[in-house]
Image (cartoon, rainbow, N blue to C red):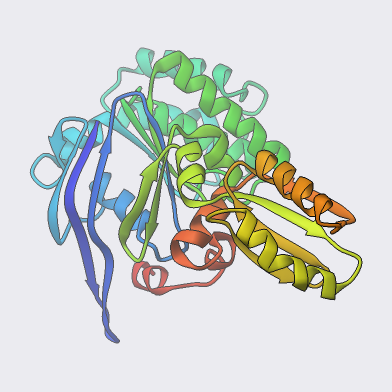
Length: 328
């Protein structure tokens, strides 16, 4: 469904040249759901804009839905749906009218557009609000309407650029369920960007991590966590001195583990947290060392990003960067 080779995008501003995307190689099979993770300015949205023909690549190649984005952009656009970060519907229009206009823009007959609009209104739980002015809709309802607009022409491939941004937890969960249902019912390939790590973990079969315009990891969430982050074991002691004395012994017992002392606690990162913790506690008990508490936490995708880049995705996502300035 998507194949890119050394895809690159450079911008030149009055202040400097910006390498927004640096040789991205990406392969997405039909029916997959792939999440792109990375901080603001990593190149995610620029990559999506090139794949959707909204930006011309500086170099490299991209074939989307069987067509080259440079030489066959009309054929690409006919086969994809794109939901950007902003709302796509006009504020003074009714939701159903926006769907009909979208369908007609894609060459659908009036009857076919009405039938498709009815189908999407039903599947995305918009029956009670589809005939209201869009400015009166809630954030979750507007995002569902945006997705309906992107699906109006039944695309083979749907791009979602941070679809849940700005939604409360309940609306986020509802929207995620709608996307899952649409995939099950229509087999649509979905590529999404997100800053919500739990969203990527729960929904995507593959996660592609992009940083500084390049792909630095590409695997399933579980593979990434297994390869780039271990379980976190926290052992608590009565005094900081006990924790400091225990740290080198614990690192010696847990081969390959990383660890540090934080106050009265020793925090280790090791594979097989439950098994490792049991071994550590048994040996410490034999040696007369008694932790007062132990906690085991499974790694998250943020741990993966931290280990890959040396920073937290949550923290890195907060600051405006060169890509945002350039696009603006």
